[in-house]
Length: 252
Ligand SMILES: Nc1ncnc2c1ncn2[C@@H]1O[C@H](COP(=O)(O)OP(=O)(O)OP(=O)(O)O)[C@@H](O)[C@H]1O
Ligand SMILES: [Mg+2]
Image (cartoon, rainbow, N blue to C red):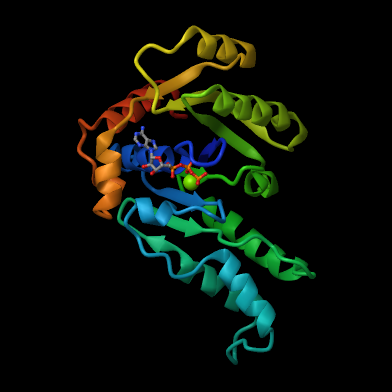
């Protein structure tokens, strides 16, 4: 069965960056095939990976709903939708990327949703690792058939507010139908020595710190030059921190 690695946390704290660097690590360490899933409608996992996203699952659903009769002749609905999902999959040598895009809108899309859902589940089963960059409420993960998450990283910046969001998400997990193997906190842009106030708050949440990622100037540079974070050198500060983190916490 595929191992599922997922990320959650408050907006803007570094989830997509961390998810990208996890894909970077796995793909360079012979962990292929990997499926990166962008499950955050406002996200940009494609951008951080330097990939152009032309279609999302949300687009496929919207387009189909606008013109349900527009199926090419000789194809049935299921076939047609499945072909579109295959086309939306961005294939790279070491990993593929699937972008979920817009969430279900109003109106009954149940049938289309079921077809899309079943097919993405079937596709996912072909991979050794699924790396899922989540929306805040983690709806995507909750909808998965197995509900299995092998490792959930709760990402925060170096602030008590970020940590409180981690705490809330951790509390909310109980109400989701998820079967989570391990949980860890990832502190992004943290100093070498975390303050007592911060560590006290972590102790209250009662989860281990999986990594502290230092402020990495290379991330800004790559963003400004529109370079893929997958191309960051091995010795960049953020890469070193993620590689270290995965030595300890990557599901085998
Ligand atoms: N360790 C770091 N050092 C320097 N900059 C960082 C670091 N981590 C993240 N950033 C920067 O912070 C910004 C937000 O990061 P990112 O997009 O990964 O956050 P996010 O949690 O995915 O945000 P959103 O909730 O909007 O999806 C980006 O510009 C990123 O380059
Ligand atoms: Mg993001």
